[in-house]
Image (cartoon, rainbow, N blue to C red; front, side):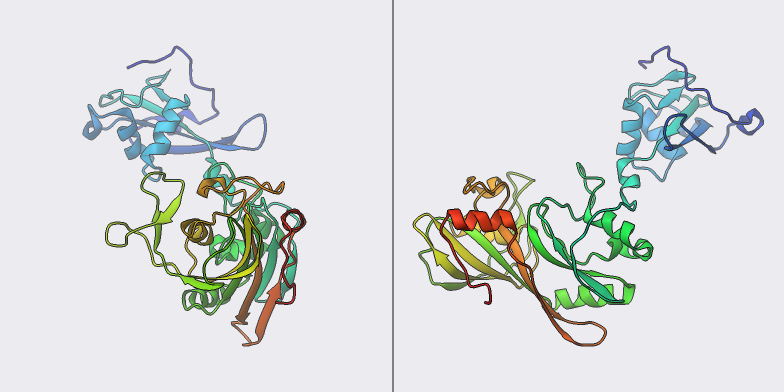
Length: 348
């Protein structure tokens, strides 16, 4: 086992509680700098774990954490083996060895925290709200974006959101897609909206700008299944359902305006697969401008894919009222349309 001579941090724990160390004991303290709560657990390796790898033995001491997380703790110097900092996840342990683990909150555990974020709320009542999401705002916390998301903003806006799965978010937009989203404020309404989306009773319409002039029918329906791209796990792709775990995907596409090198289309979703419009447009030979992930080149100064969730329509799940919302095209996309000499009827 490779160890360093560094001693574990001093902690204030009643020594009586640590003897004997036959079971994990929990004590918490706050770091001197900041308010990050850290938990120290100490234990002796039981006979049943004699000869096991260190990371596997830790799983018996803190079973509520994943093995990947425990490996990260070892690699970050947060585990002490017989008083010395452990550095190898594969080191073998012996029965009776003393283990000390410093458990700090992971980014994931800190992600669901309220934050003050300005949200463009276009409608709100006691049951739901409709939000016009700007480009660049991430919807859910995820690697690389554990804070500053729409979910954090919803938690900061309404304390009751913490009692709802995903703070009431029932569908999402990609980070760089702008436009309308509906968010539930009660569990009953959330369940109803999820069912309505599954039943295709929530109507979502997008504006998109693609490369190359449109040459097919002005209106067409694309019914191509979508799944994870087997060659690039960061992408989605049109797949063969018999060979891939993809799902059916259905998009109605209508041409609004055409130029020699670009086309402006309206897309209506019947299903809500990840990157559905981006994948379907690329499959037709019209990748969205500035969508590098799917083959779209930067154009007209637009710094994100040219996709805007413009129209949202549904029946209110409580009172049955027909509701329709239209979000103006944001300034960056409006400027790009002007540069490309593409136009659309705002009232359509």
